[in-house]
Figure 1: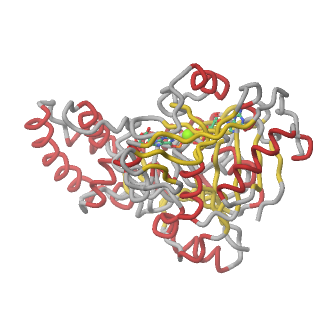
Figure 2 (figure 1 turned 30 degrees about the horizontal axis):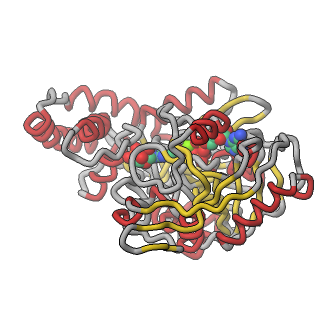
Length: 428
Ligand code: GDP
Ligand code: IMO
Ligand code: MG
């Protein structure tokens, strides 16, 4: 059985968690391969709400294995809290959760640096989630990170924390005028966390490759989205990992050919949290109306999400870059009663004129004005619709417009947050 990947096609928060949860009953194992606790994946089952930051969104399915791959940055505090929270709700997790020993830890000092950098007046403000993600990946690239294998080895852990904290103290005291951090206190907490996590720490790459060779169905769960990808998104207003499917092989330690069928998840409109260019943004009451109707407030930080029309250029770029085999279009219900609905079909860029393909260069995107085509909307409540043919005609043709222009057909249409509120055509 080939693998299936679920990837955010926009700026994150497309509803990846709902889609993974929905189709995870077909999986043997669900794998996170990048990002960290910056992710917030909300799943609603029988009216009960679950929010995942580090745990894969397959954990609600009893008996399914879940893997946190080497490409993830793991904040042990968040992971242990999340585990406890779900266990207190009756979910048995520890015997079906595997953590890659090669995954890097987000240490308390990473959060401190994230906060200090974002507070800097002179630097570029990314509007991060404040979860220490960038500094943790920077240490990984700088080869001074602490991996889970180090976290569970006391002597290695002590040496590495001491070396890192003394370096960081020089930096934060001199450059930021902040108070120095105490290596011993950080070590004591980390050592205890390492003890608690140790039984779950494994070499997950070999394990996943074996499952794939046995024909087991592996699902890869993306966090964030293509437009927040470190290499391919709106740099520097991005996260610090490869949030598109190009990150799967490296972040899960599987061959590129194992990535399998990819489902790109896209909202029927767009949202973005944090700074950075967002050509389709609606700055008027309509944007406000979509935010309210869609409950567009961050699951991790509670920040209001910026809202705009569906951006065809961005979604087509995502689809072509990743090679999506199908789309999951979410939150169609939110557009009910919005009047005429827009699609961004081109950018008007000062000095260049009309552009029909996503230009990638952030400086160009910053100067882009959206060229919007409008389509008649619908007023019907579609939350109880379970087949494409029962959707209002204008909703059907809006979906067709999106799929035609993006160049990928839909596999799932989501009309509400619950598992049941979904129209499924096919899922490979
Ligand atoms: P993720 O980060 O991609 O998993 O997405 P989030 O969970 O951060 O944000 C999506 C939000 O929309 C969550 O609150 C979901 O419960 C909700 N949601 C998902 N699909 C739908 C849908 O089709 N309609 C509505 N109204 N809400 C949805
Ligand atoms: P999910 O998985 C939406 C954004 C932040 C900021 C930028 C960098 O729920 O879709 P970071 O803390 O990663 O250094 O912040 O990326 N961001 C997200 N936006 N959904 C997410 O995750 C995000 N994770 C990070 O708002 O603009
Ligand atoms: Mg989210």
